[in-house]
Amino acid sequence: MEDEDARCVHCERGSAQVPLLALRFQGMELWICSEHMPILIHKPGQLMSKIPGAQQLTEVEIPDRET
Ligand SMILES: [Zn+2]
Image (cartoon, rainbow, N blue to C red; front, side, top):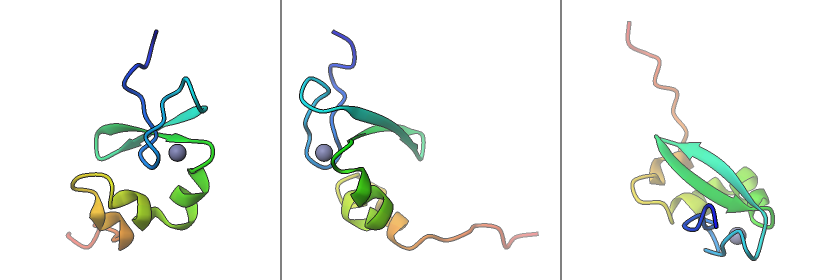
């Protein structure tokens, strides 16, 4: 099958069990199931704590102050 290692970042279910949506974040490809997409929208910090190196999304900065 395809996408065998695609798993929801929150519940770790695979696409055999739930519909998964692909995300791209910091060059990583991540997956989230339809059930947990609201968490990504409303409480991204909760998800980001599950992604190594991605905790900084809880405080979104706009890195645009260098000229
Ligand atoms: Zn999920």
